[in-house]
Length: 385
Ligand code: EMZ
Image 1 (cartoon, protein in one colour):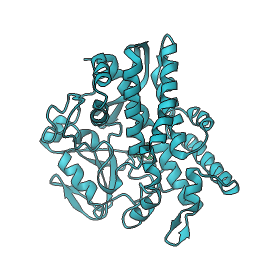
Image 2: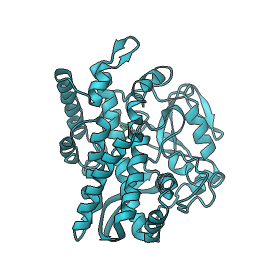
Image 3: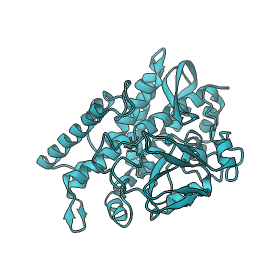
Image 4: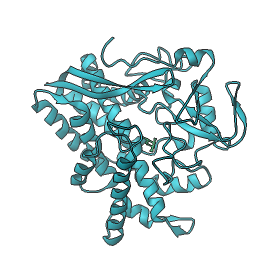
């Protein structure tokens, strides 16, 4: 098996019963595994809500480390629609040409550093700085600010010692509060200012609401993007011919971005809380209990994808759910897609091959199911064209 392969540990469960029950800190979760059921449940927000107690739809649950509601992620329609409308245009900015050019500049710098070293640890010294620097564009704030975020490491709620680290989470909350206060005192055109000026139901957003949006942006788009980038590097190490293909046919980058995110599925699943007693895959789900929509499993469903366990960079029909599905689909998806598109293109232009020297896989454990989601570390050397 090549180092970049990610197999599908859900296959047998998906094709036999369609779900799996796991324990999460004493609050069990019914993982929904098939593509059709995942989409059906994601669509049905009246029965499967996101607006439960803050932190409870995340698996592992964050109820013990977070009181602030993430917006619009932990809100249901109709409020969800109104909140989302406040930020939708802002999150489309990555499609603009000048945004793309700035992103290219920043990504080229990261590739230049990788090429100039004998070897580089991709997670900490490539993916994390790239993700953090790119985030300054999304927030429209100076690049230097990313140094602080890089110092937090790959996950804002997890540390070496704990999967749910309250003191680490507090660093983020205090930082965001400080930034909101600064934005109130100093006029500007960052996302903080945009949110502080936004009108919601004929009033300004409260500080707590602004905090809720910002926590989502910092937490939600961090390890996911880092895994996406790191897995891509491992993939190219195994498949230098794919770099040549993109170089020869640059439009392949468009389908490759989608195919790689389907294959990697950096976010395994996301929960919902049942508002009434119901059934999923003929299994009883009690009111106020949790299900999860397993994007990673749905993305390998062979009733939807031909050769689901193969990476086919020019795959035509690709209705993957790696960015979620229905009204809660990822707000940062345009940014992530643009980032990946520029990265694939720039790598294909500048890099001949990548060699993995050392790796430590990051394996998630969902009950008896073990799933590779990325790497704790991946040391590699980059050879220039
Ligand atoms: C939440 C989540 C959002 C959660 C789309 O995912 O990402 C997780 O990494 C965070 O821990 O709080 O933001």
